[in-house]
Length: 389
Image 1 (cartoon, rainbow, N blue to C red):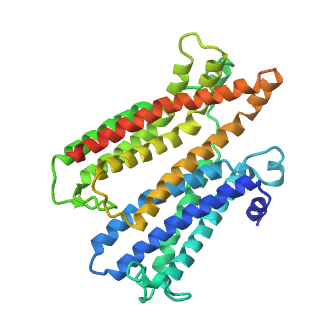
Image 2 (image 1 turned 135 degrees about the vertical axis):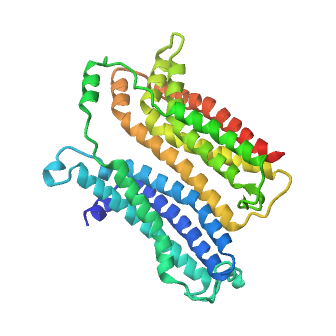
């Protein structure tokens, strides 16, 4: 009840983010139900049904990651002074965040179920001249326990991930001693994931190259009609994506260091220090967007000139993954803006022109684009090169 009251009194922008989480959950739930419909309509093709279910992992992961980011930026679950006195400590706020995430995702799952039942004709008859009857196994009884199990995947996973991401963490005594001894104007420490990310990125490209030269009987059919892709190639793509995500914070921190190199002025110094402080917040969403962009560019390169038959479900899944990646980065950027509100206010009170602060923000965005856009293009070219031949 408290979570519902906090949700009702939230800012319209916060409500919009929750509705976007519900929309993403609805799209992912509909994909899962369509997989169930395919399995019902083709009982002899169990392998194809399992493959379709495996392709839903990417939309599920993108939706859960977006839901966790929204829960992290929710003002209703942010610790504030005085809340602990009324029993709303960090642990209780974590539970509220998990409940709010579960409510938003459950709402989306219910919308997906209603849409699925409507397209099957279980509510008002078959729409669109029975065009979806074969795809959704219309006329066959729907196994309700299986449908509810699939629809519960996103709410349960998202709420558990939100609780794990927002759980209270005790400060380390050793870290406290280091913060007492560090200079007050020292830059933030560099994230430790850059070497691992580069290693996984190189390993993924190597696995993909080796697998493309050793075709076997374990080929899979990618969405959109790209057939004959070895499992090793897909494993290489997965390693490459994980490497980009791990390397994102380190690359963002490196951008900040490069901006401050060679006698920086006030704007470059502010932009560089800002990127170093924000590396952990926006670095990982940038890595996710880089991975999605490289995969999309590689797919377009492979499809050039062939025009494969991309079905509506494939388009929906691609839109979900890309949309959640963009929205996650935008939400993280809003979180960074709110986190720097005190610093911005202090600079304005000291007489800093607002145009200079806008220039600092543009400089940060330009530095990130100068690093991540070429990286996305290079990774896409290297990923598509083994399959192009």
